[in-house]
Amino acid sequence: MAMELKQSLKLAQQLVMTPQLQQAIKLLQLSRMELLDQVREEMEQNPLLEQPEEGMPGEVSEKEPGEASLEADNAEVARDVDLPSATPENAQEFKADGEGPPEIDWESYLNSYQFNEPTTASNKGNVATDDLPSFEANMVKKEDLVDHLQEQLGTLRLNEAERRVAVLILGNLDDDGYLKLPDIEGDPLIRLSNEADVPMHVAERTLRRIQNLEPRGCGARDLQECLLIQLQAMKDPNAALLGLIIKRHMKYLESKNLPAIAKDLKVTLDEVVAAAKLLPKLDPRPGRNFSGDDAQYITPDVFVYKLGDEDYTVVLNDDGLSKLRISGMYRNALKNGAVSPGQTKEFIQDKLRSAMWLIRSIHQRQRTIYKVTESIVKFQRDFLDKGIAHLKPLILRDVAEDIGMHESTVSRVTTSKYVHTPQGIFELKYFFNSSIARVSGEDTASEAVKHHIKQLVSQEDARNPYSDQKIVELLRSQGTEIARRTVAKYREVLGILPSSKRKKYF
Image (tube, rainbow, N blue to C red; front, side):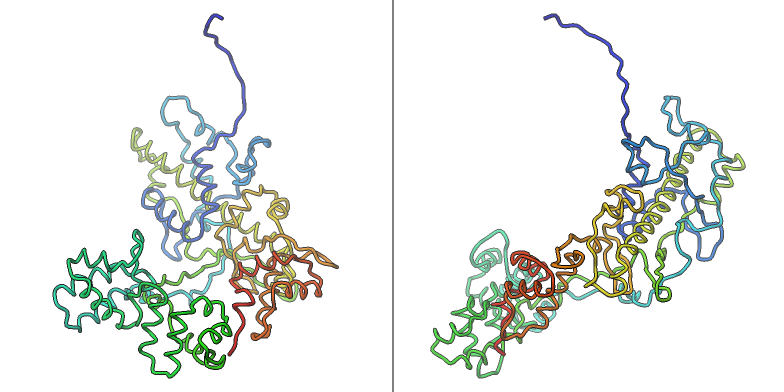
């Protein structure tokens, strides 16, 4: 068969994701803190963006944007983002004729925006910041575990060899205070003694001195050693028996099988119970108070307030969000024709487009969050009135169809966004639950069933806790049909131990 070259014409339609559209979609899924970082970064890179001082007039607000006129078959996401429709003023922006940056009618372009209203389509109320951490709290450096132990080591008389191995020991403590080397098995002290070039008995002596510092137990190589170190300092007649139990029957102790411990050690159950009562006084993670992560404070993106007896209102939280505007200096320079053609004008033109797209994207993000929250409030009125037990099953498609957006847009908007309601602060995704069938009446949400299981466990007799099968029977008697394996799964999600480990002897 002969090989030959041919030319052919092909006409096709496809959705092109412009950088501006990609930016708008990206902003939808950012959390509040990530959005603030993004705005701060854009302001550092774009000289046309500025944040006016508090109370200053002239903040930019877009006119209410029209619906984007994109092809319906392939542009659902773009339609949700609500891009500006093509007009004679901005049509040239989307041409690629290879003749360099197009000319823009600056006066028409700038006059199409108002300069006397807020950037975001939002409320005019402010959120109290009494619950936020103080400035001084953010400036204070938290003392870590190594610093705390080094300060105590300074009061001890250590020779040069002991100091070398002590530095290595402290440097290899994990967040819980244990001495562990992730890349080796066995006793990590052997390697540390070799690295410090000291005899093993010197390393052991130094480690014991570190283990007796406060908090006691730091430097232990496993849980058993950590608990035994703390027991040595306890002056209690039952401490010796608990130490014997920890050495021989850790597995029985973990499963609370106290009768088996009493039988093996040939002591009474009351003696084992008395010894086990000392266990809560021991700390299995002695270093956690120094190496724990700082608390993360949640600032809601939107508030839901109840007005009167029936109505709820949705109010966006704009506190902390920059009310961006185009720099007055550049705006006046462009309107007065003070910018000469060339690279300077091209640079300003590019930055102006970028600034306008950012402002529009933030505006649309806030509008979309508002619409989604309004829809959730409509579906979850019983939850807002009566609490978690009345949460209804809800899926993304229900909200998407209600507000006329795509499911992917609703998913992005509800990710890492929080709402303050009369029932507390929740992530927007919390309101989307699968349904659990009921014997009679409407289906209930899976989250409501989890809450019910949690309530049942909290009210059980600690000496005779409910088994998973018993919980199934209790739920069935109250009209909820659920399998035992589903109860076990929900119990694990809630962090509830099995009945055998929840049983208490004292």
